[in-house]
Image (cartoon, rainbow, N blue to C red; front, side, top):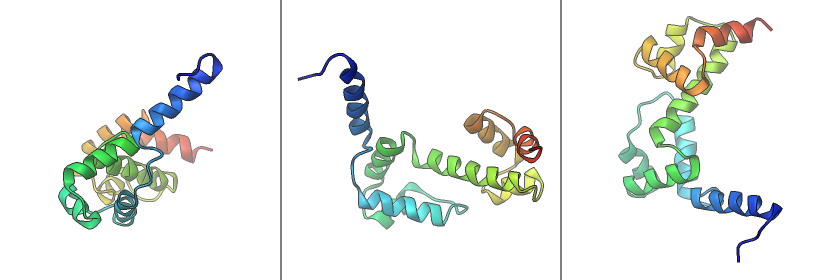
Length: 132
């Protein structure tokens, strides 16, 4: 039975969360995420991380999409951008140094990804954060 009225929104939100796997306890995925967070700046392949969890690479890809709404590669890029935001706020190093330390191929790749994830350039972000 589908609820109606004000409970319909809550029902839809919960149904959507279950569909995305937000309520799915999965220790293997948690193990992968812990590994990726601990080795954030290294190069990772889906097959290698799946081996750590003991699952098939396609199944791991499915779990990532279900829980986080993105691929493992996109998850890593977002986490690296978050790390770069912390570094930019500290005023330490050039943007190119931060980009390379964050695991991006070059300054241009970092800037494109940063703008896509945050909506602003690294230079603008640094200026806003450090002027407070």
